[in-house]
Length: 110
Image 1 (cartoon, rainbow, N blue to C red):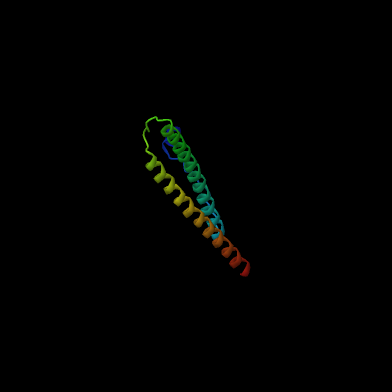
Image 2: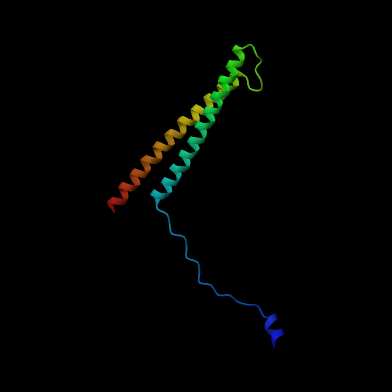
């Protein structure tokens, strides 16, 4: 009898998992805003790094030392690209805040 019990599979019955609660549109917009702000902070950090590299290269140039890996023009291009991305992310954050306000207003009306 013991060997028969050992051969039989053990069936575990679990309660069905409850579905995750549906997030509101406002919560989704807040998450998007937070992600965009995080991305914006990273880009600003990158911009500061590029500015520091640019200043370092400029100091080398003034000291008649040769420029190393990135040229002055490449650094300026990278800074411009990062500034443009910064501006785009700021616009996106403003748009997300506007959407959040609109969703909140619509929620109060119902």
